[in-house]
Length: 263
Length: 249
Image (cartoon, rainbow over the protein chains, first blue to last red):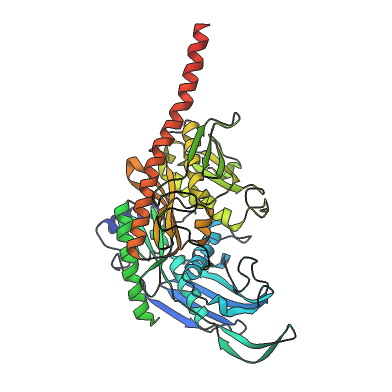
């Protein structure tokens, strides 16, 4: 991704981090302030907007009926899509999803899916024929780094306030009744991305820091502290020792966020 | 995930295909299999059959994608429509786009990108038959193809997965274990540099199991690494034999 940051600035960031400092006075292992607003899109069955520093992500959840996958006839369907909309960054272009937005969507999807966040068995209307399909659309509104953590948090927040319509099945026909029920959930995974800059592990890199980042590793952690999804990204590498440190760090930060957000 | 399956590991700790927990599937590696490519490799890893070809360093097409200060590595991971049980559409899926990206990022740390400005290396990976663990086998083959093309490398990149099946951490999952098992942890590794260049996971593991799986996968990588080096040498042994016989004539 191209950047509009001077080499001098990049060097400055890298040197700061080597000394354990960051440009915005944060500690290496500290998140930026997080604000989450829930239920802001009335037309969506669920929604949430997160501000992670200046990064802003909106997630909308739509619930529709559709066919289950042939290999899981009794399970509802979860699909995640991510849009890096052009208004979010001078580097985003209109057009079909590129590899960055596909990767983002698939990391968010994997965290939710592998931890069984949505209780998909309860979304079956008629086995093998009709189930609820949960569309989770991630809309990046301002890109200032760490889109993965922001999107994963916003997606979970949106799911937690998603309501599905009450219904009954009469003669194989679906009839919508009045009122709504909470989307059944089984787990609340929190994804923490650890970046590697100048051989130091940092949490929640902002956009400028991402331009000097060698590589990153995103780790989704469930309530029990177990790991349910991992993705390494970026053109650098991690030593086995750094992987161990990153996984411990991600667990500690996930627990901290869970407490703070009361999840 | 389907939890109602027959046991994938029997009481003696033997897996469906007769392997022990820390045993690799049979592997076959061959270098220089495609005459038109600058470098190529073929891997059979269990029932996986995968071809990889490398072109370059060469001029970038389209030209505007070239970078003034380094080489660009491009990778395309693609599955043949007949490689899986149900025909796969030949159009690139979201999974293939993601895998192409993570495979590229697993190979980049091995290359001296800054030494070849304005050029590109293209790596094309075709999965002819898939049987679980294709991304790992693809990386192993792709690294060989790049080496075969004569592109200088810091080390070969080698990949292998570990995972959890029936409460046991096992090495190198095959298709059924991948689909029905509890977790899958693919790892790409440069043994000489002790550097992990790809790490993914899905499923649920305790932190200890995760660590155990990463260690086991690295162990598998080290074994395949020896086979990789052997495959590269074998190609040049054949070339040497041919040259010697020509001299005799």
